[in-house]
Length: 309
Ligand code: PMV
Image 1 (tube, protein in one colour):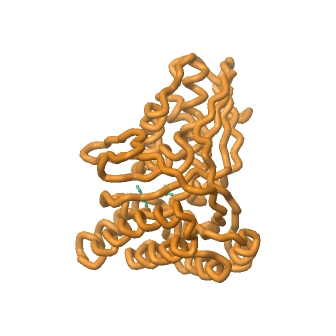
Image 2: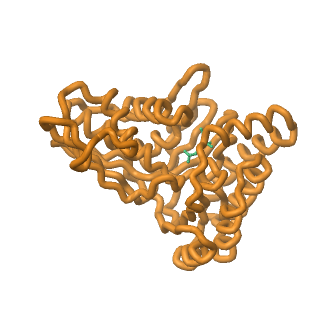
């Protein structure tokens, strides 16, 4: 038998603008998914058919990372699905990690991250390597257009290239508020692309977000949470201007702000989830729930993919 676990992620700054080559900052958080693999007479997932839609990432990951016979797969996850927390990336990366361990391979982290990205891209049709890299490496990840200090790896797809860097943040307490409205990433990315093509002020918003990401990183690293929160709020306003906001998401952001340093949407938007930086996580969680959202209190985490032979 082999098992592996991988963490959830949150995008702190820079979603959508990263599609246009601007930087983005993400972090692993302390919710994990664990995958167990054991050779078996037939394919099984959690004791039932592996063909169920919820195992599509597992199937696609095994197609690429496992050359042997049928497996009995067990998935245990603390990561709420469709909540902007990267549950699909975590299960993908954990499956690849467990499969390479079962095959007696050592599974280079860069290879796991690249394969994980391919799986997400194949299943979703569109993906950035942020989620799978964060699930693999753990800690905080800065995506940049060019290679710089603490480069982990680069990931290419067609004519696009992402340089993924490790960076160090203090431990942060964050509250995620989920609207429960699942919006597909692809159409939202396409909507932003149309706006940026048609409207120079949208292109300026994208560039401004890039600046906010780098300032936000400095603010977090220096422990200036008031400044970081203000930058989160500014990032959020720019994302709203790009058309990826949603009335329910806005209610959650507004509910969280009185008890937070700052709050913004996280991930693709259009519904989806928001994140608040706070030292009163319980109050923020309560406010989010009262405003009709589901709240999850999380902390940043250093541990990425963890493989148990
Ligand atoms: O859906 P998430 O949480 O993985 O975030 C999507 C991030 C975007 O910047 C909107 C899309 C992308 O490909 O980077």
